[in-house]
Length: 108
Image 1 (cartoon, rainbow, N blue to C red):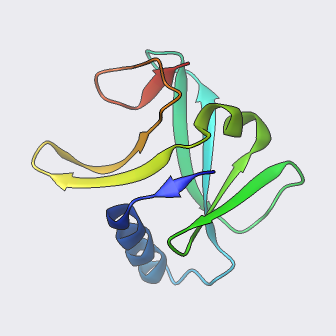
Image 2: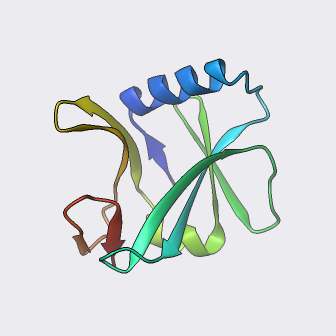
């Protein structure tokens, strides 16, 4: 399962409304090799489901990930921060054994 916080849901809804995305769009979460800890998160809006995709819904937000990425992000929560120390989406991943200082890459 993938989860989304209330703040992340609000920001996703805001972005989708600004970009006039319809109900067919969703948040695609994936993992790529790279970053200072070895793996990096990627997040996009998409409207095409692939055969190996895993689909989840939390708080009315549809989250989709490919099967390979799901092995790394299972039970992860998508968060949004708008504080003084920076704003943007980030992931709280219970599977990560370490993360880099910026929080954009991780290792398992």
